[in-house]
Length: 359
Image 1 (cartoon, one colour):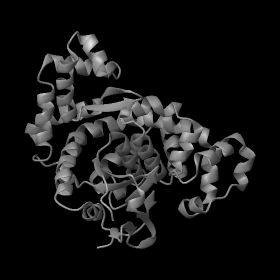
Image 2 (cartoon, helix red, strand yellow; image 1 turned 90 degrees about the vertical axis):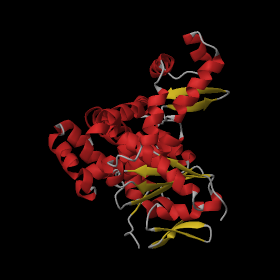
Image 3 (cartoon, rainbow, N blue to C red; image 1 turned 45 degrees about the vertical axis):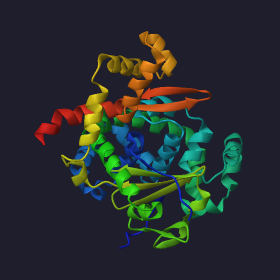
Image 4 (cartoon, rainbow, N blue to C red; image 1 turned 60 degrees about the vertical axis):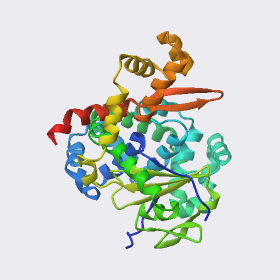
């Protein structure tokens, strides 16, 4: 949810500081639609727009219109990230298979109940008379009805455009900034540890203030979230949010964005500890073998032990190192924990390592 508010000069919550290539994809598309809003990437994005194939430009313009300059896509991608789609590879594989209900629910920022969306999908004739005050105050019912009516077309064209955008544009951008973002996350965790969580939330954007246990938009006081009512708070570090204040809430999780200054991303000091962890994580042939197995498909510790003919305890020690380097994501599925290889992070670290001495 994009809060168009000009920047202005309770109980303890669990704040999670995150980075995410899939959320950054959507954030970057918000800037691509308005390159002047992101000066540090303006030249790059202007070139992308000039060189974009006509079919992709048609998709981009259509999607920019129906997603309010991609801000609804940001909400959708935040929702997907909460549901175990944590990598670009996972996103591109899972996105075309999303159900209409899940897709619309994410696009409408969780404001419309899934039961209502399901009814509208089954009864298209009811869309024209559908009304909801929360959605009317958010994007307006006209656009909401259009999203429901055109959901299949929006979904199909977005899946096609995302595949092109990752392969031809954003994969390279992530290689240049990904490791630095992970480094910034380490710095932010130290900042959070040094202050109260309420005070930290106010550092995320000058337009935010915590008042009597509520996170409130300074210039739009009716936009507020009672911190005691949310299960957790995710703070996404983003190189593309610019001055925009982006906040959303899905299923008990409050999400907001904190801008990373480009000067931080270009600093030699940012990410050195993480780069050292990366080198440690690939310091043996066994770890490479584990990553190769996980690149092919997610696996449990037991499955890795069987594939590599090693003791599960030894595999667990290697996995611990790989997780510390932000190369693995443990995903619980029923009673098992699957290890997923965050290949985009591997790419970002490898790229930063190759260019570090040239900075």
